[in-house]
Image: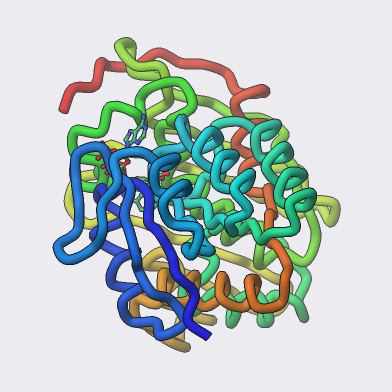
Length: 307
Ligand code: NAP
């Protein structure tokens, strides 16, 4: 059955990924958008979510592609109106907000899905099953990109709740928490804050692994030229390298697979399954690592950042 859906926040990720993924999936029908300044040709447009919820009881699902800071109020209103809710990553600006939404969804008997698009990259399941049969010695995340390219002019990302470089870094953490067979926790972190900004531009994290493996992450938003979204894994029995954000996998230097861009189509398929089976998926483990890094992190002030 086709579910009717409204997309909230017609910005970069809505246009780049959500609209094409929804349009290509027969399980979903994009019935309306909510955006204060933008609309999509041929689709009913609302400036406020409450107007849409009042006018369109037939729309079962609200997908939120707005920044994390306003996300809670939108999600709460949609859940209280009995709609299923799909949250862009990160699922909120604080953990307590996410716990509250999870509880509310359960009380209302609707689905909530905290999406982690990078987990749905093609090669992530391959690396997960390869790693499941091996003993980890070392895992190193190197996630370096150009903020001016990926977040042009976005001021929210530098404001409290915007998470700075953890906005992309949490994607790497969502893969790490998916592929590791056991939980790790942040032991120490260094966070570099531009002197004129409230969120970090770079971060280094070290984790404690119960098996004694060396687990670390480096995030940096100042990378120009080729971008780096790599996870290198060493085990007693071979090495693996996941690159291009999860779409390319090499094992012991041999190319195993180079996939295509299926993350958002896979997310909407997963949401469809959750709605159909009356279940929810609210894994907050990547967000916990970010909160712990901010709690434990040593702050270093660095050069001002301007677009
Ligand atoms: P964006 O383009 O800056 O924002 C999306 C839209 O949200 C805006 O066009 C704006 O529409 C609305 N919005 C902004 N601030 C708002 C506020 N305070 N209250 C209500 N609506 C507001 O951001 P984005 O890059 O699409 O990112 C949105 C989310 O997607 C973030 O959580 C981000 O982490 C995630 N994401 C982004 C990317 C990427 O490559 N950029 C990739 C994956 C995931 P109106 O002003 O018209 O209401």
